[in-house]
Length: 159
Image (tube, rainbow, N blue to C red; front, side, top):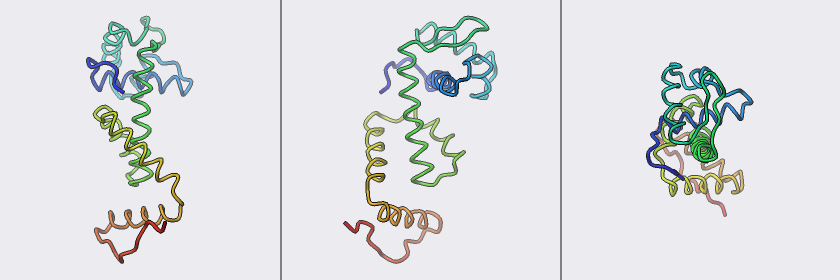
């Protein structure tokens, strides 16, 4: 659920980076954010100033960056989207893990709440199905995605 419209995907990315550093028990400082996001320290500083002005972060020069409750809610939302998209791309579609991470970063900002809910439900549905049948269907899909051929017609449902 996107809480505020004035945030750009890049700004959401900074909030997410702070949250991820906190979860890794690394102090969220400008350098750590810069390294994580692969941008310059002045770029990070500029973004942090904007996010402080909007009330999503607290930050003293040369000090730790801290999410406000509003910033944390947005960061958690974006990070949840990221995890679900990465799981779907990597585990279901078998996209290369590095590519899945990179593409999830772009997609997480554009996906509607409705689509996120449906995607989450789809993943949960697959996880509660009898593993043999789900694996059989996914295996057929992965073979199809590699060679473009369906092979013999077999039903996946078996229920």
